Amino acid sequence: MTFQQIKYFITVAECLSFTEAAKCLFITQPALSRQISTIEEELNMQLFVRSKKALKLTPGGVILYNKLPQILSDYNDIVEEARDANNGFEGTLHLGLLDIYDIQELIPPVLKRFQKEYPLIQVSMARYSLGKLPILLQEGQLDLILTYGFSLFDQPDLLVENVQKFESCIMMPKDHPLAENEDLKLSDLKDEIFVTLGAKESEEGYNYIMSLFHRYGIRPKLRLVDSMANVQLWVEAGGCVAIASDRTIGKESSQIVFRPIPNLGKHDTVLSWKKNNYNPAISLFMELFRKIIL
Image (cartoon, rainbow, N blue to C red; front, side):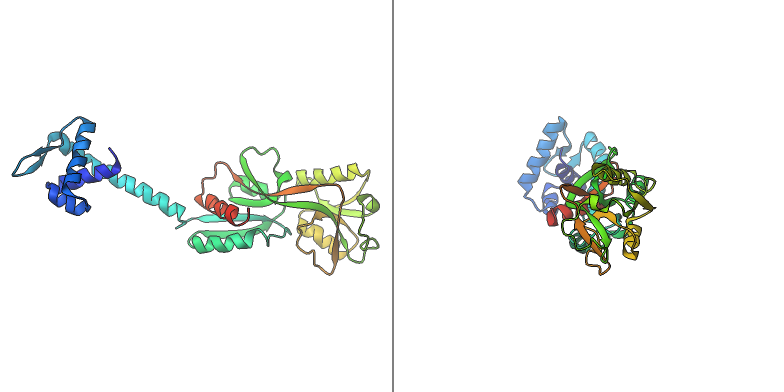
């Protein structure tokens, strides 16, 4: 018996008239009679006693009439709840973004459309350091994060979607003697002080940077900080250089310049969320993201 057939049965039981029930249901009386007969055949029981003077429920029909309206009501409530969730009528979305990463191509177009289509979903958004983002995601304080893919290795409970490529480059003060060198190599900076995230802040990020130094045979002098924002601060203040992303905010800064590091290839920037986070706002945001950006 389908839910539509349940509705047919309940209406006939309430009206005790095929003619009146058909009017309520906006179908013809013969069509309604056929539907009730189909239900009786499926259940292998008679639901109504039919006579020229009256229509009555059988004992079995009475039991169904007493029980089925609640089932139909529960079904309608569940469908409405699911529809509301899908339409974004309520909820929250906590979005975490990598500090100093340029989000202009990725987030604003999607967020603008998202807030227009789902105005009652409350969106919070803030920037965090590379190491802090996965911690907050695992703790449930964030629903969705934008970060470097290499920072999420060995976390099988996360879902990851590649959204953009970036290349590693050198960030250096604009007045640095080598700032005008377009063919700069990492080995040219072997005597410089490199400012970078410490292993405590991001083990993956630290290991990646150290692997680059190893590749070029550099034993670097390091200044360790707790965020990429502070990496950029030390470069702007002078006296340090850094390995950064070519998607870094501040590429147009009057204080710093960016120079590519050759032969390193591209890396992935990703959006990530926990597998067991069933917040419907995540899927709604990702659906729009794929449609608009990807």
